[in-house]
Image 1 (tube, rainbow, N blue to C red):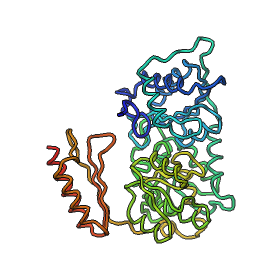
Image 2: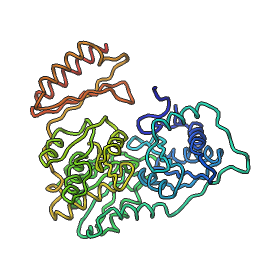
Image 3: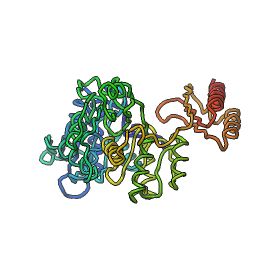
Image 4: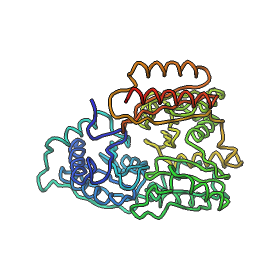
Length: 446
């Protein structure tokens, strides 16, 4: 059944429009709070946010909703999404909330929910909450209304936790690291954690003003990071996104290293240490075929899922893997975290560099990616992928790429767009195949 409010990662949209209003946030608080009132104990919800201007509005609305149904609220302020997940579990809260639209522009915002175990909610829980949003939620009697308080040591707790994931026998002394926090949720915690581990830190994207989150900085705009690494003579640069659950790296030459290379680096290191579970890693259909071939050469496997870190995590939990993620930089290390954590992933990458005693460009370049091309085709309506002519063109393309490449075609989950991606050893063939499919989709949608 189609969802009305929840998407692939919580509820998200433009602020003060559609589902992202103060009134809706209050309803979400009431509905989620009522659903998680289980047992006779005093219930608690942890609420964190990134640095968007609208975070103040949504935070207060959520507090009103949760307290009206009897939940106490603990406010932690600007905090990475994985930090909220960690605090929800470690503080024995019944629910966690992150107010963020991740890598989107500041005018957007979102609400992500975590269960008491620190994991994102199941489809079933989200469906129940959706029904309650549109229904009537019982308010508690006046004496049972919840309280709200702000705690000041939340950042310190997360910094301590993140540092604990770095190998005890290693230090970052002698490394000059540029860290780009996207003017987002990690603007305080990430530079502090790296400095406390011994690094010389050059911090950028650490002056949030409510409107500059992800603006020309962060993992989705790595040019500033790359330029700063080269200009400052740093050994490496790490870029997080607005809620710090995503990581992209720049090596000492200012060249971008994507999530595929980072997963290969971490998985390879963990395999050598005998701590890689599942005999490989989990990635999505968008990860490069070069990653798959690289892992196979080491006797490691690659299991693919649909796009979305929640699908990656589901496969990891169901099949016993402890490394997974996306080419875009969502990297999940389940030994430490219940969701993607850019800082923790960065610390594992830095550990491999320290152990190797070699430049980042050598350590992190694990394979040569196959040429890859992705194009989007916007359509007005209908289901163009079900058109017989489109299916014929796709079948012919798959036959042409067989043995030397692969094809991934999928509708977007958030907009009327068909995404056409091909990769292979011959870039000219890849381009021809993608263009041919895109044209067929356009004709079918006309």
